[in-house]
Amino acid sequence: MNWDQVWIDVNVATMDASSSLPYGAIENAAIAVKDGKVAWIGPRADLPQFDALATPIYRGKGKWITPGLIDAHTHLVFAGSRANEFEMRLQGASYEDIARAGGGIISTVKACREADEETLFDLGRKRLNTLAKEGVTTVEIKSGYGLDTETELKLLRVAKALGQHHHIDVKTTFLGAHAIPAEYKTQPDAYVDLVINDMLPQVIQHKLADAVDVFCEGIAFNLEQTERVLIAAKNAGLAIKLHAEQLSNIGGSELAARLNALSVDHIEHLDEAGVKALSESGTCAVLLPGAYYFLRETKLPPIELLRQYKVPMVIASDFNPGSSPICSTKLMLNMACTLFRLTPEEALKGMTLNAAKALGIEKSVGSLVVGKQADFCLWDISSPAELAYTFGVNPCEQVIKAGKIIQQ
Ligand code: NIG
Ligand code: FE
Image (cartoon, rainbow, N blue to C red; front, side, top):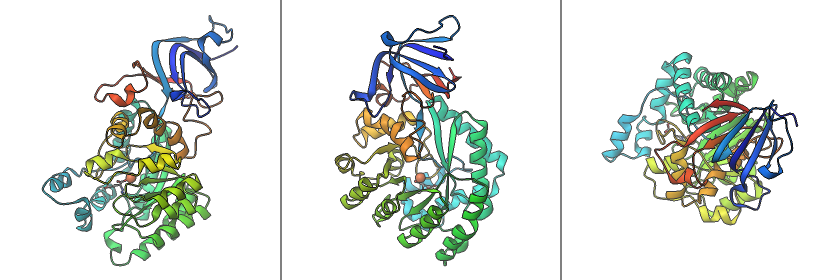
């Protein structure tokens, strides 16, 4: 066998969907990498003969390997801080009160319109570095803090550039319909026209987005407006996603399911009809425990129904300055278990295989099987549940992206 590298003395949580074992685990395993892909994986005892003198061999000393983590929902390109709103909320104002008074998303919009691309790039790069240290190899980044054509395109260009200059793969999502900007407060439909007729064509022309998202909510876009944006995106061949049922239930998830969206995100207020619709369309449920925690929500997403209807559950950071200023995958795994009562295995699946599904890239990443990209992490843990169990210690020892060791 002519391989580029081989890992031995490791236990692997493959997250392989076809395995009947928890975590798809293979204890005392080996992984061989060739041309950036997994070329062989299985019990060490079955490893075929290879040229051990010509092949770099890494010994994991009994530690665990998992697929590289995928953060499938972030807004990590932003400028400014909303610590003042944090203080306001501690004095009794709600997230909705602040948004309706012209703060919230709109205050980050102001900061992003003023920031130049270099500043935004630098801020984004630091945040990617933080995620990378905790094992992230793929991240989704949304626009949505521009709300005018120029700034929306700027944010997407920065997100794309981050993907080109960082080893983390970046998938970009156009979220022009994130909030109604002050200039359009009295004519929201005209803003939706702008998103569809001016922003979207340019996003497509410059290949700036893999998907389109809308914030479907009482304080943002109604069902009809949401549908117009999603249909325009679909007609242009882009994947679609939705911020839905975060603060109330206005039926966004059912709409998204009918349009075959990749995912609906937040969904604390989702009901059984919505869950059923997701299961029929194969749409993923992206759970965002950071926003639930930070906004001190009390309505839990319908986890038991999602399990019952076998809707793929995803865990993401939603990293943003307003509802989830939290740049940690480890904390999200922990909160998915402590707040949402997911099992550590469900949580890890939500940041690997199911996260890949939510981005439409599950054929190439998300689990460790032959033929998929060799994106994985070596963790100094004695069982995979430890990834969700601890927080504040970082057991990530090595990150491998497409077969290249990019961190150790
Ligand atoms: O995912 N819900 C809408 N959008 C973001 C929050 C953005 C903000 O408050 O800046 C979210 O929670
Ligand atoms: Fe979000």
